[in-house]
Length: 407
Image 1 (tube, rainbow, N blue to C red):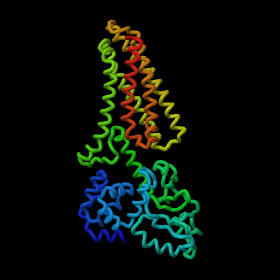
Image 2: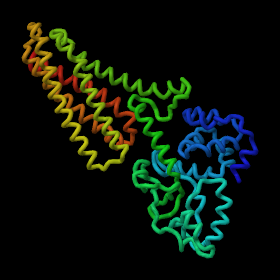
Image 3: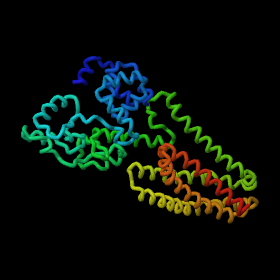
Image 4: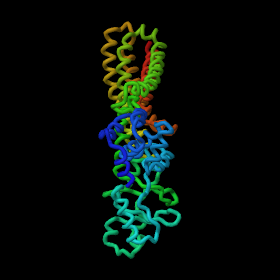
């Protein structure tokens, strides 16, 4: 009834407003919604996933936010969801609109559901005790064939599958049944019913977060959308470019420290981009595999095994490519004997390649884990950190070995 009243109160001038809200970042979407009537704004937010609606709601001015929440019957649920971290089940929390006390008759439940059905998507009801602790669920099929004089606790499914609000989305989806229900109850550790989540909303939000990972790897913020203004895109990207610029200056300082040696043996300069590019690629591959493992909520034991595996793979790849790079160095250095012993330079190139690739594999696997432990988004910063550190290590190690054993 509330939704129909809002539709009739304000004519919908822009039928594509919901699509535009999804395409914009939260700040830009809030600016667009700020121009609308509170009733229409509330209706548009109801059509969005809860996490997306809450992000836009929090970006609105405080007075506008209160007006929209007053006009929306689920505004309190959005504020409760704010208490949970993004990417968790609690961030998708909605009101449990069909929760009945133990002892409620089937007839009374059916009468109340007739009023709720035009407004909400429902396919089951929740049965709770006096402390709001979840006891079971009743599917609509059971209500259809039940006697009207029976109570809900007589026909309910006991100990139903429920989700915890602190669970990551990937862990929650993995725990769903083969044929998931339309909605799932969300309970705390004591079994108290906190709300519900729509299964398709979990999949939508997880898909949204996964779609942002390619952008994360190059410093694009999750909230940046394709329709965001150029100014918003500039504000999102510039900080990461400044951080990356600082790291590149450090790499330049390492190379500058060996400028005398490079002037003495210019053949070394030919292999600097080869070594740096290969190590950067190995580190990126390792980072991508580790991020995939984290997104699928693999256990800590498997994650530790991944670090050792990527380190070992880095060493193997480094040995093979090191032999080829060392051969190339020997051929080039043999034509310029005045720049140093060709055999020595070849061995140094092969050793530096093997060690640098091994360390790049280790960094690529360990960096996302370290960033997550420190409270940072591993997908956002891992690639930039691994790329810069791989350059520092590979170039510094190669030039140090060349100076120490050949020049």
